[in-house]
Each structure stands twice: as C-alpha cells, then as structure tokens.
Image (cartoon, rainbow, N blue to C red; front, side, top):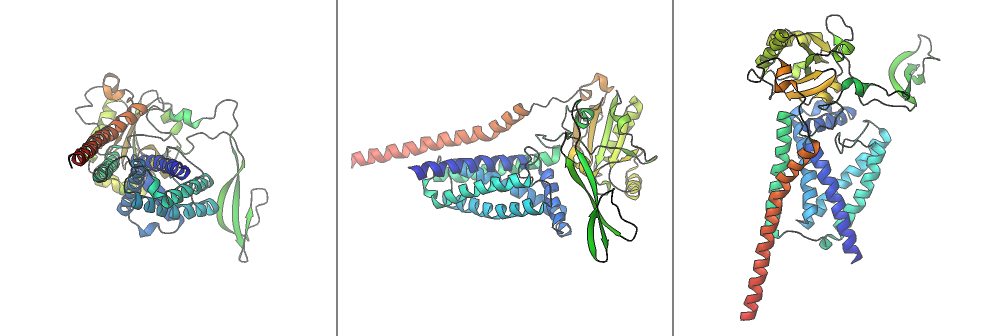
Length: 426
C-alpha cells in the first residue's frame, strides 16, 4: 500500500513538472531555440547545427516532455512511459550537474522564461525528479490507469497534435503567453529604473592578461604595464543590489552613433519599432507592408525606427534589397530577441508603454490603418488576459479529453455489465 501511494505521488509530481515544462517551451519555441543555441555555442558546436535543425530539436523536446507528462498523468503505456522518463532524467541530471559546476550558461531554460532557476537549483530539482523516476520505473505496475488501453493511443496522438500545433501557432503569430519583461502593457522606462531607496548591484571589471605563457587576473586598481597581453574581460558581482528587469535596452543611431533611447522612450506620441536581431537573416516576405507602415507613420507624424545588431554593411544590403527608407539604430542582439520572437517583428509603443507587437506574418495592413492611431482600435493597448488565455487553452485541451474519458468509462462499464450478464446466463 505504501509503495502504491508513493509511486503515484511520484508519478503525479513528474507529470505536473513535465507538462508545465513542455507547455512553456511550446508557447515560446524561438526562446527554446535561442537557449539551445547558447548551449551549442558554449560547447563550441554552434556551427554543426543549422537553425531549422535546432528548431526541430526545440519543438521535439517540448513535445516529448508534454506528452510524457500527459502519459504519466493518465497512467497510460506504463512500461514505456516509465522507461522513457527514467532515461530522460538519467540524461538531464548529469548534464545539469555539469552546468552547475562549469556554468557555461546562466540558467538551463528548463521552464523557459516562465520560471527561471539557477543551475544549482535546476540540478537539485532534477535529483528529486530522478528519485521519482526511479520509483515509477521500479514499481510501474503500481500506477493507477485512468483510461483503457484502447483510448491511450487516442490521448497520446491528440496530445502530440495539440502541443505541436501550439508551437506552430506561436512561431507564426508570436508566443501565446509572454513571460518576458517586454510583454504588452509594460513600461520599458519603469522596467529599466531602480526604485527610490534601492541600491544597484556593484560590479567589478576583471581583466584576464597573459605574460610568458601565464594568465593572471587584474582589476582597474592593479592593471599592469603593456608587457602583458590582453586575453579576456568579465564583470564580477561585488555587492548584490536591486536588479532592474530590463538592463540591456539601448538605441545607437546609425547616423550619429548617439544613444537616442531616452528620447524615443520619452516620446508622448506613438512610435513604431521594427526589430531584427540579425537583419541579414530577416524575412523579406512582407517588406512592402513594412514600407507601407513606415509611409503611414511619416504621413501621421509618428516615429519609426528599425533596430538591429547587424553591421553597417548588412543594413545597406537590406536597404538595397527592400528599398527601406526608415532610420536604423544599433541595439543589443539578446534584447531584440527578447522583445519580440520574430525576425523581423514590429512593436508599437507610446510613452514607453508597449501597446502591441506583431510578427512579420501578421502585420497590420491598409484595412486596419484607416485613420490616426488615436482614433482606431490599433492605437489602443491590446488586451492580454493571461488567465483567460490559459483558461481557453485548458478548455481546448482538457474538454475533449474529458469527453474521451467519459466515453471510455461508459464503454468499459458496458463491457463489464455484459460480462456479468453472460456469466449469469451461463
């Protein structure tokens, strides 16, 4: 009895973690791609995997976690599910131990941007999950099944289609749920500022220099003479203080080199920002529509800037290819990837408040830009109800499954009834 209770507790804990982890990755597949690319760069393997392969890995990983979680939740395919779960944890636990020790990336990204854990927190979490995975592997026959063998295939297939569909939709139209500091409704200036009475974190610049084949670390106070050769530099946290949620937003004008972010963010009128982490990799499928939005902005007196981390040469190539006339600014690549999960993507803000965001596949057109933004729906902040969105997703997934379970229960009960009647007759 004790082993049965323990096994099912372990099974439900694993199910919740796997479903949550798979789902938050699926609603932001590009975020998962960027995190995997961080891993590959840290291991010196980035050039081995083209973007589409990394994307397939990202969607496949979220699908695997979500479906494994659902199978654990319903108690289906108990042998294969317990083996896959144990195998998954046997791979992830040593990996997260290495990440905790070597620290090649700041966080593992196991829960996307929804819940950021340190590498050591992730490792200890995985130790607990590994114990749970071993338990359900050893006592797999103790797991309680909630559906019949016939229905388990339908549940598994539906789960795969559902979570892959979520990923495809989020790739096409931006993440369904946004857990980042640049989500709609946030004030960028406010997210960048330090509240009154709070002290910022204090960092020290450490320089790694080399001389006679030996490397040594220095700071500004004991920086040596020119006989030492520069190797690397990094920031070291000396005193923990308040950390603003946005620390990497800046806009360096291509023409002047000046940081115009304060001017842009303090603009009381509307501002369009066309965001492209790498302009040479940006889609130009809807460039005519982007140019029309720029012309609309000029006609109405609104600001319009393109932001990218690419070089002058790449920007000029984009201009030659697309006929772009809008001004360009240099920005941090990671910040641009964080702001909008599209290349390019479009953002509309006013008084530093993000009103709306669009992927390049869902840009506003002439049928929406019919008047000044002050007079049309497009100029109002898009209503984003996180709980409503979660509720809708929950209904789309679990209501059909609930119907399947009820029908499955009715069929099973009917079979049991017929067997009893047959015995009575015999």
